[in-house]
Image 1 (cartoon, helix red, strand yellow):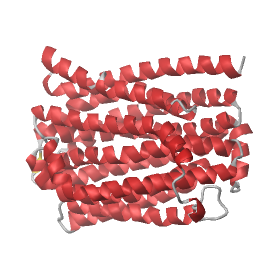
Image 2 (tube, helix red, strand yellow):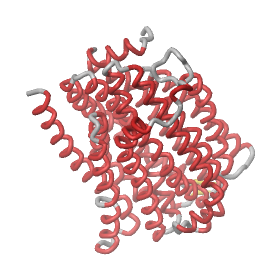
Image 3 (cartoon, rainbow, N blue to C red):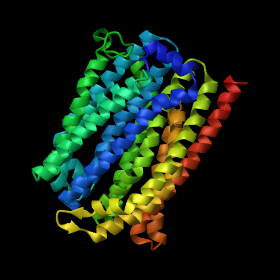
Image 4 (cartoon, one colour):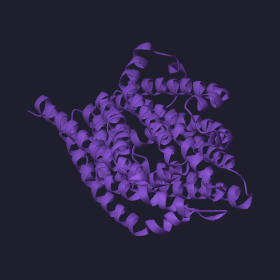
Length: 458
């Protein structure tokens, strides 16, 4: 396949065969997400080789790190809606201007994160982090935050390449990065008998690998998405527009991650190992959920460009095609996960001191319920991709807040109070949350499609 220019891809996105567009853009991202999930599982296996406390600390700290990561993710995702619309409308100077304002926002966010690192022990204690996790994971967490700041720009690079249709390049680069991280982690853990701090070092080095390519991409003067020194100054008008459309996503993603951290602190009631068990289950089911996430990410970009070009019919069709693709993929991958779950879980429960049977049973008690609810979760992701693509980020915020603070935490409290399911409760909670979130977002999407048809396709 010949490489298209940015203008040629914009034309292809808004008038080419839509199924081909979705598969060409989404499949490489989905395959990368699939590989990334596998690598995350292997990463957790290596952490579990250190000790049960180590893998639980990694799972706990990773959830806190996701709060920071998802703020930037929300800012980028929301801002890219505005950037993609400008691109779809062929307003290329405006596209570049918005891109530079987004770079400034990410730089400001990076500085805030880096300056907060010295205060992290106090913050961790404030949110009632178990002392054993702080002792085991503070240095790991500090390095992970530095790596996260580097990854802000990598995420921007990925979003730009997605808009340009270069998802194959993204897939290859990210897989190479994951191989590098996995290889370094294996050397550190198995070869050097190191602790979890070196897992964070491996993450930082792998992010720096992609960062080198990101710098090359965003300094290409021929691109409509490149850095322009004359535009690297705060424009109140354009910054305001980016913040207005992106803050709901930033709040939704950050609050969801905060909610997950809160859930982790609640399920410590079942023992600190339960945090690791839930994290492992999430990683296993994430193989399916993250695969469809690649298609949902590309769905938002394609829908935004078609909305900008006035192709509302194609935007709606892109949503339905994406939903069909991810549902079929989810069913296939979920079946494979179910078949091979027992040996995978057994490996997770094996540390330097041998097999932890109790930990193994904890993982199994969560995994099955988590997997069952995943069918509705993938539909939820496709629904959110559509809402973001049409610029309804506040509805995405509403859905996300309901998912965590209505369908998850209260459900966990009710299950603990009125059932005797014991260690199965976190899994049942995940299943109920997935199902109700999928149903709610489907209702929101149905309403918005009706409104689009009335307004633009009558």
